Length: 179
Image (tube, rainbow, N blue to C red; front, side, top):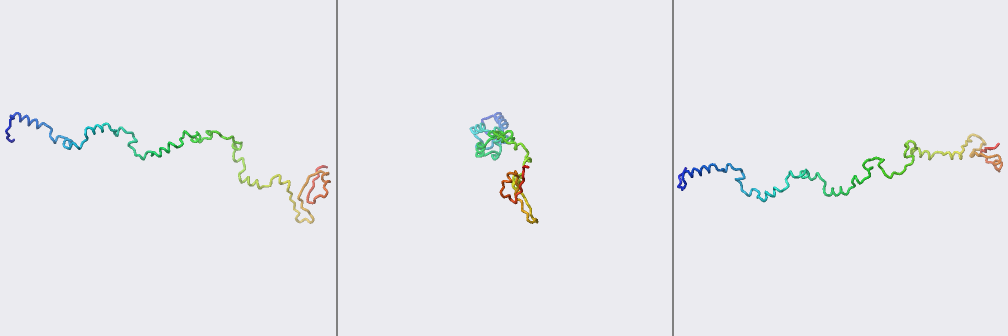
């Protein structure tokens, strides 16, 4: 050790050296002790940070992607859409019995469709000879018979009605109904 002139006694110097040796040395300090004070927040900034919303204070929506949610325009559209509660029960149940204001149906509505003709059968019936047409038609084939007249009419009448005919028609058969 170097010699210095000092007003201190050896005991005082020894005490000072002991105290200095027991003091915290720069190598004993953390990095904050060796960095510039402007690298850290001020007390005011720390107070703001303490009162700020922390990640643990947030719900799950704060930590999910914004595309997981509807846009404002989609939300407005949903708000104006018909909601399930606005619909009649039948709209969501699909049950016929949930319909209201039903018309009174005829008996055909309660019978099997096989009980009726098809459209093709109906078209065929429309073009068929009807019972009322049969009485008006008599077929007569005189092919190969010399001097024969074709019969185009058959008539039922009494003897008095027949006698009243001035000139009977040769193509009519007259059936006298009274004896």
